[in-house]
Length: 479
Image (cartoon, rainbow, N blue to C red; front, side, top):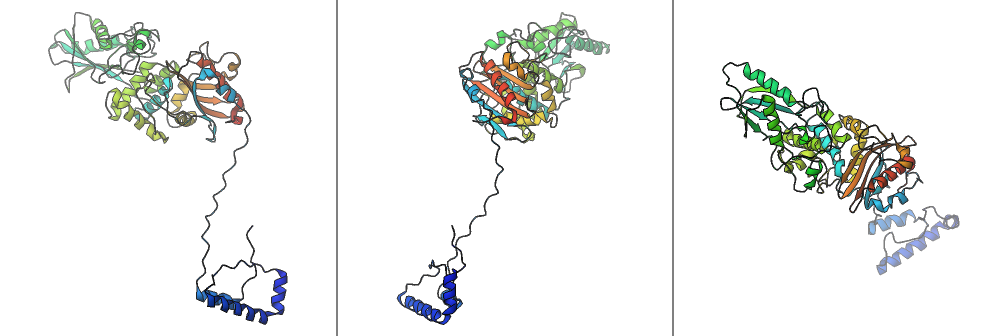
């Protein structure tokens, strides 16, 4: 406790009664101390205030030492209320292996739960959310990829120029491939023939040149497991291909070939009527355009990519972002182009590593905290980000990767219709991130990673802790 300056009553009375004696006595004492060099200004600890005359003498002899200025107290932060709904037991489930997670109250931004939330790690297909956000920022929701046919440099030749539309279909017009609303090669061929024959000076089309230079090599990232090609989850990424290079255009999971450009070229040659020599090359600058077809808009492509986690669509979007932004047209450009596309959202991207657009690579790294913040904006439908929310799978929904029979089953079905999230799965991890409309009405954003030596049952462990977040809502405890 600090001492007060007010004199004690007894001493004050004494001084009042004997002021002259006190002054003389005090003066003598000061004189004696000055004579011996023992005066230290301000060193007295007595609570009795010095007489005015003595204070003046002390000031003239040596300036008083002022106490240092004390810093102003910081404004008190609002105390976070005590939360009592714990998911600690669920977080300790060994099926989650190397577990990371973060949960935010999407309204207040308060972190309710965090386990390694700031550590960048591989995301699996949850990365498609970042790819989609970058595409909306750079390309915009209405952008369409265009496939064109131009006149070749030699008589009777035409050039099929891939514009990065991996959804272009070899199915007959009127039939739908796995990509709803895709452009069709037979339509492009019919337009080409009509434009060609409109000029009587044109000889018959006898040569077809395939130009896939819009995307650079390689078409396969070295960090991808080559078995994904045969298993039917990923094609070579080329600017010219049909149906995501599927053997079966109507099946989402279908084996892919080792030559998507050749497959597309043969399908177009057949649509032209056959008897056409096929070669590879590039279109001459300024060549006359004969015909073109366009993909569905980015807004539609994003919804298809997210709902069923289509790798080809995600890689298509990522590469188009790279080209459009001027970063390049290869895998090596994606780090720069994707982060540039995310920059306008105002969330710190420090530590994020982008190796591809689909999340198949183990070399991708994104902290859960980035996803929870991005999903706050997605949930609020900021800018064009509502497109992403509309494409998210829904627990217990009619379609999408959270409608499968092994997701949100049993007790976890309590969250059906309330979890809107992107799933992820690679050999070294399972992930889930998105938005929860909690049981108490609180909107939450979350990201859960189960990484390392994991099995298929990690999905159920992720669903269980997510259902726990749903039950707890804003009462979710971090302990």
